[in-house]
Length: 123
Image 1 (cartoon, rainbow, N blue to C red):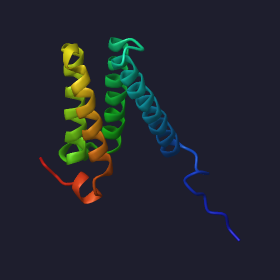
Image 2 (tube, helix red, strand yellow; image 1 turned 90 degrees about the vertical axis):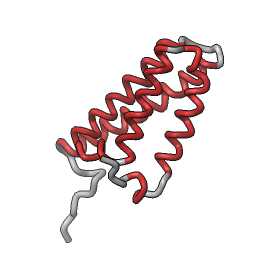
Image 3 (tube, one colour; image 1 turned 135 degrees about the vertical axis):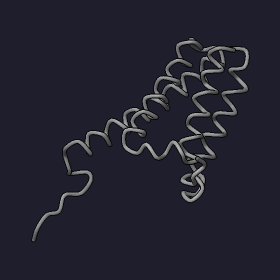
Image 4 (cartoon, helix red, strand yellow; image 1 turned 90 degrees about the horizontal axis):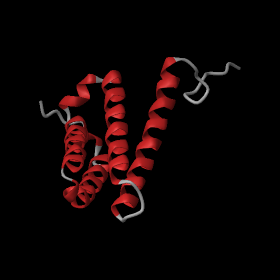
């Protein structure tokens, strides 16, 4: 009886990228929670917004390394739009709260939309 490696038992570059991706996503979620806390007065807004932006950019770069074509699809364009909105909240802190809620809704919709929608080509 042979043992076939599964994703959880494989090692090498693909496994390392998967773990790095999971770590970046966990860091990004932490940054979003910190941003929400800062918007409620319990934290540094500039630091939290910058962490959301940089972790989001890092995920975009990693996803682009794995598949540059995603930037022509709804999912990739959505990420670019979200990064622009986070950048806008850095430039205009007075807009940070409404932009936070818009980003939260947009992120949720894009993450849970059907695959056929997320992967639809725009460009």
